Length: 130
Image (cartoon, rainbow, N blue to C red):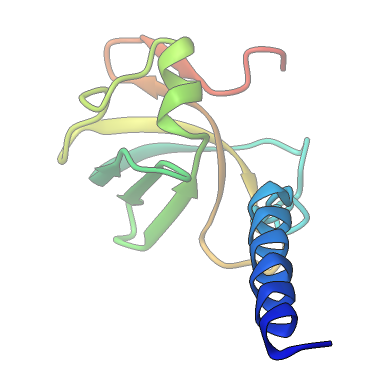
């Protein structure tokens, strides 16, 4: 091969590699639900909302119980929750709620938020099929 053809082959191979990489299906970086005791809902009453985080890839409710213990509840994406009636203003700091959740398997204070019942009785559900 001549020098010209080697350069040309390198350019073609590099372009083909770039196209192949661009067409690759991205791998999933999403974690599983194995960290939660899925399907075994527990309920906490009189939880005071500290913070409601409306962000991708998951929403979070940070709250305190009556003993001032902090809890964190992971939720679905904002896009998913919007379909079920949630908004970025669904929860406010200081609001007292009841939380139905699937607990963390390791015993830490938190879990996956299944539903929230507000003080007026309105219920916000993340898993409508339950």
